[in-house]
Amino acid sequence: MATGRFFREVELPQQKAQEDGAVFPAVLYPNHSADSTAVELCDFKEAIRAHKPWLNSLLQKSGAILFRGFPVTSPSDFNDVVQAFGYPEDFYAGARVFRVKVVDRVYTSNEAPPEKGIPFHHEMAYLFFFCEEEPQAGGETPIVLSHIIYEKMKERHPEFVAQLEEQGLTYTKVTNEEDDPSSIIGNGWKSTYNTDDKNVAEERAAKLGAKIEWIGNCAKVKTGPLPAVRIEKESGRKTWFNSLAVSYSGPASKKFCSGDTSVELGNGEPVADHAVEDYLKILEEECVAIPWKKGDVLLINNLMVLHGRRPLLKPPRRILASLCK
Image: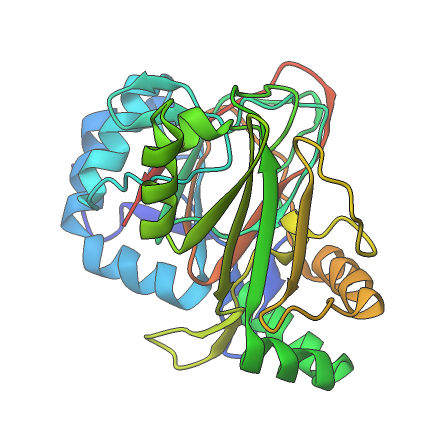
């Protein structure tokens, strides 16, 4: 039975306190017991629907919520939980990563080899993760508050941040025809734009603000300039919202091989390498990486929070995802 006391907030050692008194992320257990056998899935779904305003408020305050100890054991269960929140599903073209549909609104999180880490990035408005198989070691999904990153970078590299706010960033990726499952951003241009016609690919890229230059059968896709800093609507805070960590590949290179990525300021000037290298260190200093437990559901406000993936040290690991808006 879902009541006002259905959820119990708990503290984990990895959480970080925020200046406003919130903790990041919020962690909720069933109030009945830490043992999920005391709660049924239908109770969990009913509680989500009944307390959605409170959950949305908590998500806005904390940026992310980890649900632990609830009876979510399968992809279908996870899909039911996502549906209970009522967020519309988000479909998007131009995706860099390769995902496989599991059931309805549930997909694999990333088909790249699990021993490879994934840099911090944003995706949709809301992003759900579900741990079907917990890793024995490694494989965490680190998360970090974007406004904290902005504030730290503004403090340490004010000139670089001013450039980003004024110029934005332009991203370039060279991609082959077919998918490369060994890459964390391995979608080929055919699957990215859902066509094998180069002219159609150009048209669809243009609708996403990108331009394609063909190098044989490879597509050199340039996107931007795009804003690198955004204002979070609810709080009015400036947030670090860009794909710098994913696209930066060191000092400017003239290589044009499939899988190559690069990033530059919106005016075509190179980014400051020392500032980007410090930024990558700040991400690690400020992030939270809670080890996965089987049955965990992590809900992220992806407009407020960056996320990544730590390399898997000891399998198995199976994390599923659902993207919403």
